Image (cartoon, rainbow, N blue to C red; front, side):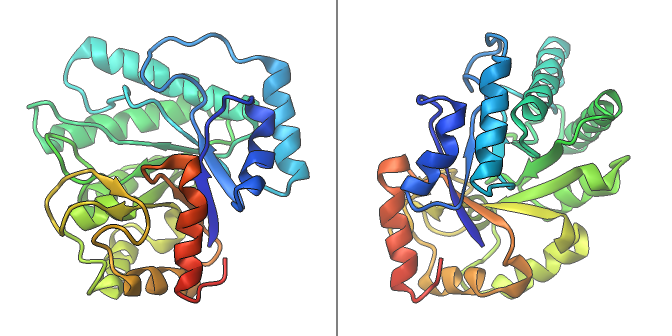
Length: 279
């Protein structure tokens, strides 16, 4: 797997590949704008082009944008849905300008309308985005969730519904967050093979585009989205070995989102090496 991490853009987009390599990472994920605000200044065309050039020169082709946390494509409230959809389209446009092929996003929450209605709304929004952005090269990557509150996407059945109802399967994909999956009731410690088999049956392993590599602060199946640094939480050493030695996952990017951020990534990498894994 290609180990990456979520990086700050404080040094500018064009410095992201250099900063990733400095930390011992092979790829990276970032926010294209402030993740907690709806509005953002227009993307500087020169900065965007500089990023695309720098990534190509560094041999990085699987970097990702993580969409704004405010986006809720499952919202039953028309105003919130409209703002979410417009922000979603803007993230796709930014991805094209920055030369980034993967847009990872949380599917959303039903806010009392029910899971089925939310999944229908999310699928519809994704299909509308694919129609409006037919010339885009950005893939829409749905991230699984921990199942907290009214969020959907915690079940592989939910992700399978989104996959089955897409008008263009080649333009969508899925990102598995290891902490979220464990918290949602998938026993990665003791039954990783069964998890992969179910994922393959309901989504298709070829549509798996990335991992978010996070340990879990809390014990199994609590539906609590609390990441921990690798080796410090409740995911087992065997899990990490199984993940990194699974040949069907060997070319996927795995982005660290651990609590200490860039300061902690070297320690996360050292933990993986201590298991005898070659990174």
